[in-house]
Length: 513
Image (cartoon, rainbow, N blue to C red; front, side):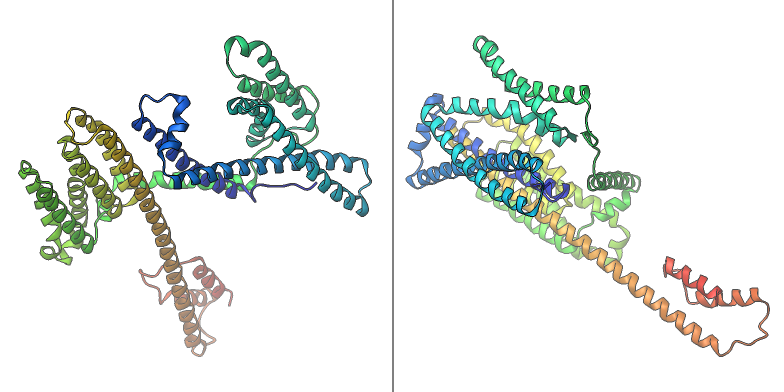
């Protein structure tokens, strides 16, 4: 039987759901922004006048975008539903019914395909006209949404969820569950919903799933029905995740046990130290003079001292000394960077400096933190700083603002959206860069291994050529000859050259000569 798949395998399905979830979160974020902007602009607006307020206060150019977007959403939803209906009727129902009656010859198969195409066209036309008539009859959008939920959730949700979790039932089991869901929603709408006002779609979906399971275990089922185990691809994915988690735990354990080696990996390059030193000096001087912050001399002095230390590191510390104190350099690098960037951000939030200035400092400093530190450490600093800044932002509630509350709210939302976009770009670029770096390191290692093997092979050949003409017949016992050949095989090896499986195989082959 022909099957239609939405993905070629679990890996592709995982990517599709990941991308869909990411874009869904982004879309929901902008929808929430529209709601917040509307609330800030008209806090006392009733829910009936929200849409009229939005359409009245946006430019004409965006009104056209709204109309086009609504039309595109309606068309996209309509053609997807019509296509699904046509496939279900023509392929899943009619085609299988006809094939069970006919003989399955080539002519019959061609007739089935033609009949299936005609049924799909008539199904699309019939369902589309029925939907139009229903829309003209009922003009309440909320009521139509309730009707769609009463049709989809009690009938389709339970079989889909069970199929996702690995349950494979027979058509009879599915029909029993769907019939139970339909009867449950009809009874609920007749006797339970009028006095309570509670929608019964979830209850009907639950009854559908329980009826399917009961029918499966009460009646005799064919071979292959029921709960199926994961396939080989899914097992490989689980094993890969388990290996990755084990490797992460082992890396964390090793980093905690050997703290000096961990700090040595944090050691930055001299160019990074110089660049961050310039950034710390220039940003603090600009904040002090441009924003006219005159009562923060001690804090500014500390920041300038740390920035000067970062800037003068390349001048006063030689490369020979740096190699011996690498872990100490990494420790002071992390501490100095945390003091000049995340802690500096928290200091500005706690001292309630100008709101726009504080938001700009936060955005700039946290971006630099995410740029120069490893990804996991930069994200940890970022999340900790944001959580503490949210708690410290209550200081602004007691401060008199020059800006209006609505302007402050819009400014906060603007910086929030901008920072999310920038941080997302940085995380994506650093993840991509780390992946490319691992690939380059792997290829360099493979190239070194290949070179080493070629070098050993040439030395083997040279050893064989040099000893072939000097070997005499009375060279001793067989054991002495074997030992002599093994010594020739490994005479060129030293402590810096690794041994591989092929080397031992070459030594063993010489014993058979």
